[in-house]
Length: 237
Image (cartoon, rainbow, N blue to C red):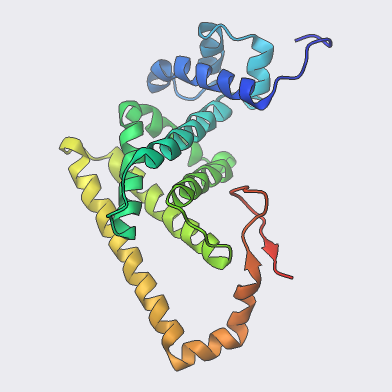
């Protein structure tokens, strides 16, 4: 890319990432999310090496993150196309988690390699942000309108559910992920029980006193502005 070349827009970068990820996936199962895998995929996808460096500045880790984010985008589209109107909220959340697992099922070894990479201390923050992004994509697709501290707690809890479901799924050999589906259902049920306890605390006289006193600080927390799924948030005026 020379000095006279225009900077690529977000769409062209996204298209480049998708092409390279698609080209890389057959090799990832054997070679991992490495710089060598990225270089081979850039060549196979017939992408300008300079464009490849721009799309994946940190090499293999950015390749793995691109795969994760693309799957989240595809998940949002898939959930929008599903009719879940008659489902309870807990069933919708479980269905969303299952849908994402179904989408990555053909690439189980690639996901295993990514999980191992993001378990390394140097990449742990990237892995946490990726899981948070998935939780945010699911809640957004399900129509979550929370703007207060619940925006954070919902995503934090679902991040825990999803990450544990992935780890369980990686060792699941049952037909059609039957054991994983049961595991997800149990985890969601645990969360719903926790929500019932929270509601009971809020209705309890002592709980009301706490929320009217020190707990009021939580009422001032708002989700991030601009539709960004990460931190920091904002403080209510």
